[in-house]
Image (tube, rainbow, N blue to C red; front, side, top):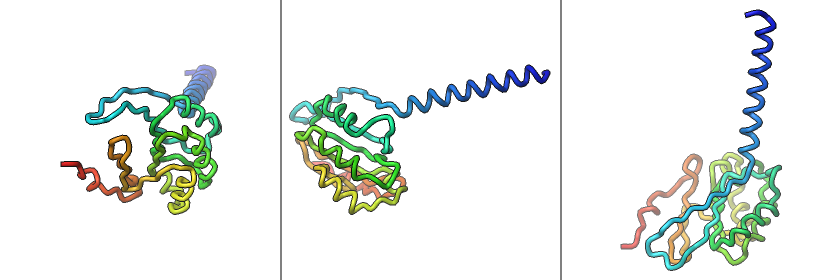
Length: 170
């Protein structure tokens, strides 16, 4: 292979790598909405559940107010913040922003590994969630809509209490 062919190949490979990396980055910062219908035995009414995870705020592509508008557009009965909500130690603005999410719905949160990796003050985090009207479930359960909803602690960095999973009605 001569020098000119080598340089063209190198330039092509570099461009392809840059293009594929850009597509991946664009895809990974988009809000993905998926709708599923699930039958739950014994459920007294139909529920609309919005589950949000791996936000890794701050999000430079989506403001909290835009996110809350998207949540409210779904008219949820239950909002679940399923962990990895932050990528910095500044969590107050995002959590307080969720207080504007459909005020009639049950709002629940759980911790992910990022909340532990950031060494977030759990008492402060819990207090902030509470101020926003969100129940933080860490190895805890709540009864809502005829369901027992369980929030386990993070598997990687927390101490999940799996015995809570076996606490079924007889």
